[in-house]
Length: 185
Image (cartoon, rainbow, N blue to C red; front, top):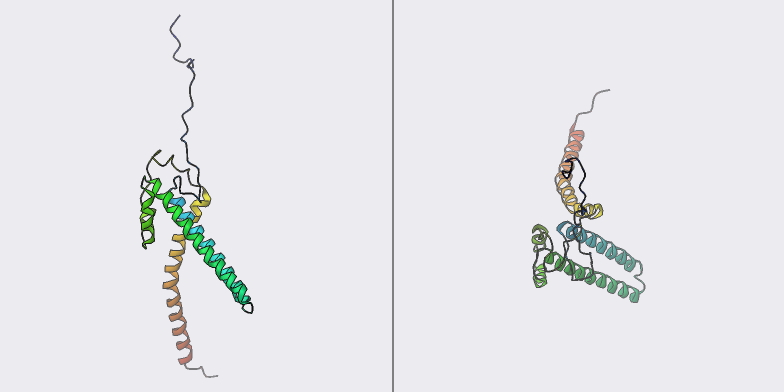
């Protein structure tokens, strides 16, 4: 009677599969890792936020044209917002470099135009590396922010084609109506 039934459940303790540890996202830090989609999403969101702040402060400076000291303060705030945006962009580039196990000194190359495209293409290393655990999975908000950039580019291309075609169409329609012979009454 020592033979257990093949249909009997196991009697040993079964451990659940180990969940993978993820690193914490810290935007204002040079520590940790950040994935491609999150990097693109954060850059797009940071750019939109910087543009919004710059426009609002610029409008405020324009409205305060009679007060030169206030215009100077607004210009200083615009400069501060721009420099803060550049600093956060460099911190994000450092975290992105850490994701594929590269030194943060490579972030100096992001000052060269179009080098950030390389950071958007190279995949991160699987599992933990010398800079920590992998970044957490992307949320829906991060994915939507990352999709704004290609969406704006597609809309721009469509507008660049459609607007001149529409203008040409309306011009030909106006010429056709002005050169037509009126009907006798």
